[in-house]
Image 1 (cartoon, helix red, strand yellow):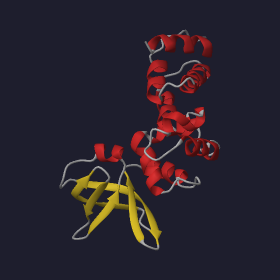
Image 2 (tube, rainbow, N blue to C red; image 1 turned 90 degrees about the vertical axis):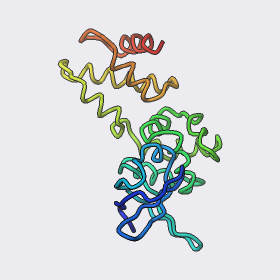
Image 3 (cartoon, rainbow, N blue to C red; image 1 turned 60 degrees about the vertical axis):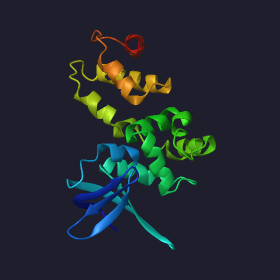
Image 4 (spheres, rainbow, N blue to C red; image 1 turned 45 degrees about the horizontal axis):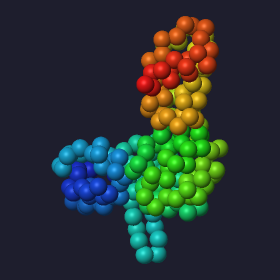
Length: 202
């Protein structure tokens, strides 16, 4: 119903923000991550919203980026994950970290969300593994921004090294940081980059 809401922040708590849009205050449910990134009271903000209408309630869920909104929409298609569950997951991990958890089968990271058990986390991975990809992530965009003079072979090797590190249980951010800091020769393969990246982890 509402694509986004723009207005001044009137009130804010860890899970809700009231946005004044010219005399009307909208209650918008938010994640802990969104809460931490909000500007101060009285500042203008734009939140991309999802409208949840039920017999006994009408709720808005807000996100600072379209990317967060889109991953939230995917989450709530999973059986057992409602809007509150989706928000809980995005309160303990970013959209990119969630994608990496799904792609690497890391149910443990998803279970850190309140109310999300192992079976539910495994269902998230099973249902969404074909609906997310590395190409959707900020990490992929950052890797593409790294200068590459090898015709794409070095970029591909670095990309595969990032994927391997996340599969080993490292966070997406740590994996990207380690791989980006690797000083390797142009002809370096995935194994070489991975070994050097692992040294950067310590």
